[in-house]
Length: 203
Image (cartoon, rainbow, N blue to C red; front, top):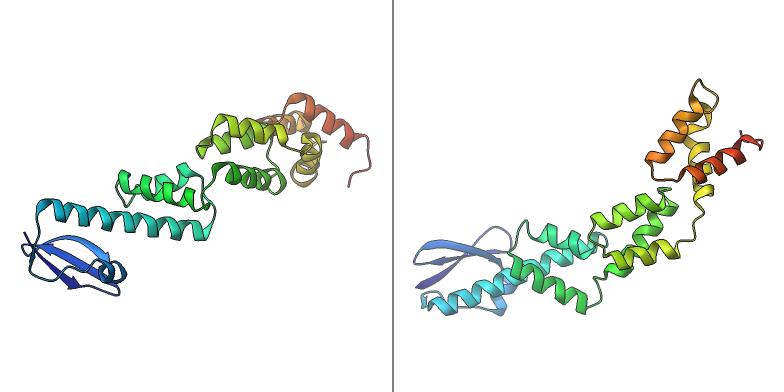
């Protein structure tokens, strides 16, 4: 199989076998793994080159995604699999774990803090969001157990901001309770929060 390389747009390099396009890489990779035009490659040599190209794509994609924000392993893998093969994705993910840039426990802690403090989520809602991102049950349980946010205070903050004017409307209290329960708060915590609101001079 005769291999040739053609310059593409920007830094792209297109590789052809027997004048048929096969795969695209970049100039940096090609400078490191240069093969002279017209080289007759065996099937094994070509496959080894393709594996290297795909791993580089996966590695670069990981670096790009993690430079934008932290990800869970599942999130990152799901995004990688849109453009690279599973073996390359797994290899790149393992490398970023080794480098310390990918850690589900750290991600979960930071993400949960964001949900508690900025989104005013309940324990149940935080738990659901972490599960959706592939965080293990053990890590999620530890996060919830270590949470220092008072759910009653959270409910008070939400009610003051979103539902206070509805409390005295017809059937308003019941509607507020239902809305808060849909957010994952317990009925007991909601009752306590509403009691505090209704017995203090909230504006």
